[in-house]
Every structure is written in C-alpha cells, then in structure tokens.
Image (tube, rainbow, N blue to C red; front, side, top):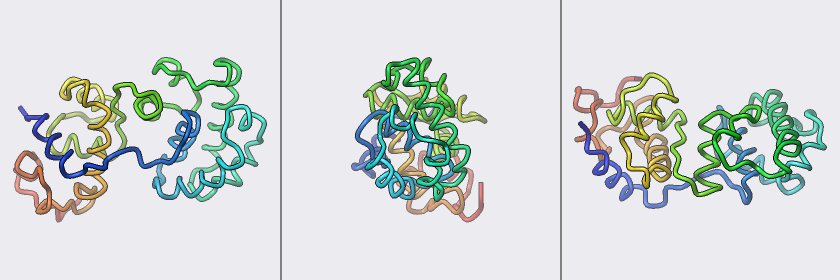
Length: 214
C-alpha cells in the first residue's frame, strides 16, 4: 500500500506554488473559466476570459447575452458552440433557481448544464474553500500511474482518492497532482528520471522509463 502522505509531502516540496491556474475573481468567473477549460489549456482560457470578464462577469449579464455573442469571445477555446450553449443555460439557471448566486453544494452544482463532478469540485475547493478533489485528465493519469489508486474512470478515481488522501489534503492534492502531470508525469514520454517520486511509483517500478506512451 502506498504511503500517500509521503508522496504528497514530496510533491508539495517540489511544487510549493501549486494552485489553480485559472484567473478569476468570483465563483461565477471560475465556473465559466472551468467550463471553458475542457480540452483547452488554462493559458488560452485566461487570455479569453481577460477580455470576456472585463465586459461581462455575472450570471445576469450572461443570461442577457445570446449564444452567438458568447461564442464571439470564446471561439479560440475550441468546442465553442457547445460551451456557449452550456454557459448561457447555466447563467439562466443560476438566475432562475439560485437568485443569481452560484450554489455551494455538489448536489446543486451538478444540476447546472455542462457542470459535472470535476467542474463542481474545482468551484467548491477554490471558490468556496471546501475540501474537494477535482479529477481532470492529469489527476486521473498521475494517481493511477503512480498507484495511489487503481481506477478506470475519473469518477471512480475521485472516490478512491477521497479514501486514500486525508480530507484536509484533498484540495491541495488536486493542485500538486496537476502540476506534476503538466511538468513531469506527462501523458507522452513522462520524465521519469527527473521524477521526485519515482521510487514510490508503480509505473517506474515496472521498468518504464517514460519513453513510451501510456
């Protein structure tokens, strides 16, 4: 069984600046930015939202925009038609059902169009300071590759991580696993020889050196 606290301690020392890399000032801005981040880099999202949020940044303002107007701002994020629809519908539902305030529970957040558990957990942990583990592609890959969990879906990985990681570390574990996935434990050719947790990693122990796609 993995010493999860040891692994997290090492990663925390490696990435002392690990945090949410999406720019936002309100829960709704973070919600929109997270929806935009699907299959898109945080760098690109931040470029888009720096212009978008300067003009529109409340549910009411977005509810009054057309999908086409939203699309004109977010085209470079990819999947912009689908994202525009989801953002528009989400803004409308927040105004209609939650008096214009982003809800603060998982149950209510996942009722919003385009909001799954990952997006909800990002908002809960970063905007509302709740203990939560958002499992994106990096967290899913790193947690399973290292052997902290053994799950075949992001949702199963989330629940397994909730068991394996002390609750007080959930939110920060999310950030350091993302940083590790982006910087060293990459999908293609992970930099295993430079990895600070390689001696605690199943992938490395099995004789992999990062030269092949996993």
